[in-house]
Image 1 (cartoon, protein in one colour):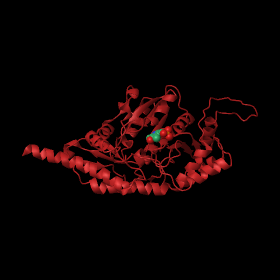
Image 2 (tube, protein in one colour):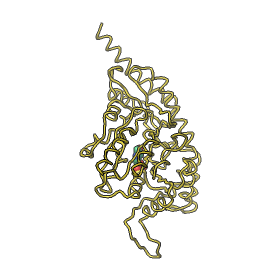
Image 3 (cartoon, protein in one colour):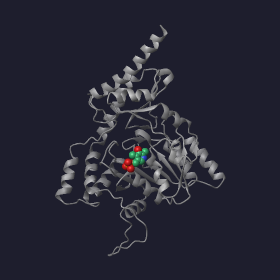
Image 4 (cartoon, helix red, strand yellow):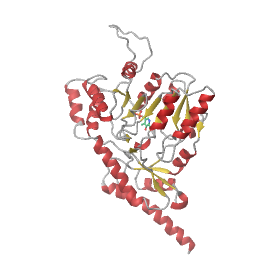
Length: 386
Ligand SMILES: *Cc1c(COP(=O)(O)O)cnc(C)c1O
């Protein structure tokens, strides 16, 4: 039996365990401690963010972000539709409602023209959304500038979900550091991981201070336990922050390895009819967190799902591109602006194994498996015509 090749697995460097040991030796086994402070500091240095709060997950960071910009019951929040459910779930935690926006084909992220038109239309009827959640998908930044300009024009705060885009750039800067608040994830499948964890960043120190306050049960400064607001238990563990420090150290290597995976796949498969790789927009540098491609069944002869199943048969884990949130049963009653592009990317899109720890043999196996589906289908197809 072949060894399984998974989509994206953790890849530790040389220092993580040292930092974890240090936490044990100093008994900082708590949701406070020196690794947390250092992780936040080093994260700011790496991304250019000015202030950061380390929290227990990307979802927690987004929940805090939405609360910090004042989202509440009955509000509308615009959000990319082609993304993971965690981009929109926290909107509903606050009693607000997502309104989804379709992707463009250049970056697969929120279409700026659709957003600009939607904001203008909402402005005319006096029903602007209370925030925009902009997702940077699969390691590639969205086209931030026109989106930020439109948000500024209508004074709608922009929240960036950069959970998948740590290490990417947009015009030389890190996505996640442009909007009012940005969030990142260190879940087990992300480009770097703390097993679970997240980061909230903002230019505004008071917002980050408030995030830390809410994340530690909203304790008022008093000798006894006093609370004037409802808080959460959302801080990151000092042990896990130690892992994060080690992982940040190797982030650039991880980006290079994932980009190399993409190049190897593209070289080998890019010429097959009907296969198109996720484009890299000219405004930035993508990490290729996951290598994604689309398969046009008419040209390729076999559809995405057949390819995925053929890979699964050989113990290779590939996954469909995110199912758009406007197609999810749980969001069935939410409005979506456009939607066709995201739907097509979902129907035809496939994410290949993309870990930074894949070997050349692993890549070769994936490539051979896809080549085999294509060629065996062509052979049967030709045979039928003889
Ligand atoms: C992973 C992810 C999240 C959630 O992060 P967690 O740390 O898993 O809570 C949010 N948005 C996107 C786009 C993600 O990929």
